Image 1: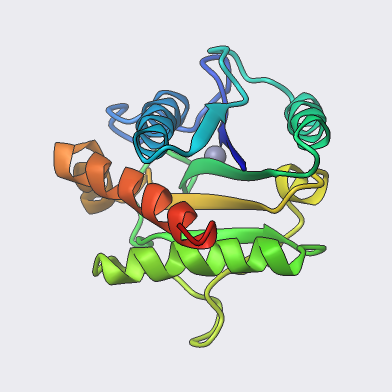
Image 2: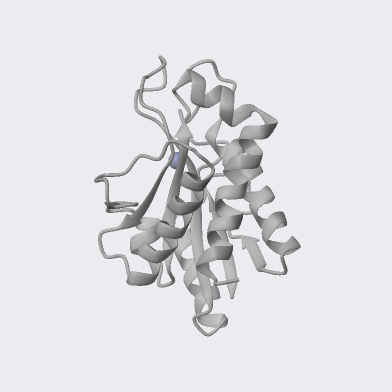
Length: 193
Ligand SMILES: [Zn+2]
């Protein structure tokens, strides 16, 4: 099984940063993506980033890459897209906070299971998880990276880049470790390893 990690956005994406400019989503998601790939490989799990460029690669191209690998591997790939949430326009701090996971409206049972595994891991780490309903661990949205990929696919929104406490946590060494761990352990659980 190959784990594909998609890191959101690029250095040329406007906005997508904390109001104080300390966190930029494109660099942060790449840093976490590298930690996740390294952590999975350490466990003997094949993993790679599908966006190695620093620029914002269009969603259509990212889906094309994922689908090509899914085909090459004989349908043995899954995808996790890593992001940080935002509730405002990026100019001021907001109250919204916490971690959440998304699947597309046309999500397969496998995508939903992968999302549930990640959510379970986040909750076992005592993190505040945002759920649409108490019994539903994931949100469903019309997300191209999940909708247009053939493999099981989820998107994580790792806390809010415009919440002051979340940004402090995200930028701390402990916070980075925890965010990476949600993915590493959640994916491991999904794979049944
Ligand atoms: Zn994003």
